[in-house]
Image (cartoon, rainbow, N blue to C red; front, side):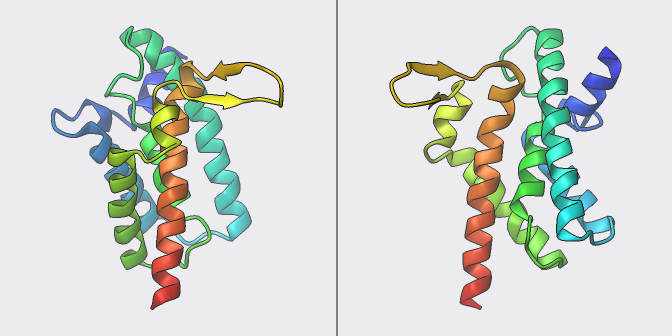
Length: 162
């Protein structure tokens, strides 16, 4: 089970790239999105949610294996973020390329709340309760989910301006 978690968490080992492992994982996702046939919106949403759920488990296992918080080899979060970047966007190679660059931009600059999510982000669970910290797999996945949402919004805005 541990080998499966590492295989998935490292994006079929693209996370071991000596240069820019996050970009390598994002590029893997872009290739998958390019070469896999177009899905219905519902199917795509289900696949994306499954990637996030599996990513939470796999990245938590990998984090324990590497004995390091959000180790650079863990790139399943980038894969999930890329899938989110193109959700509900018309399929085209051009849109996948634009989404790739937008996602990398937002993943690198991490506008709020992505920065807070990366730092084991905080969230108010309900009024009157203290802030709780996300850690482990959720913390690893969360900043890239937020970056993917930002990239998706930016891509939709760009497409609307055409």
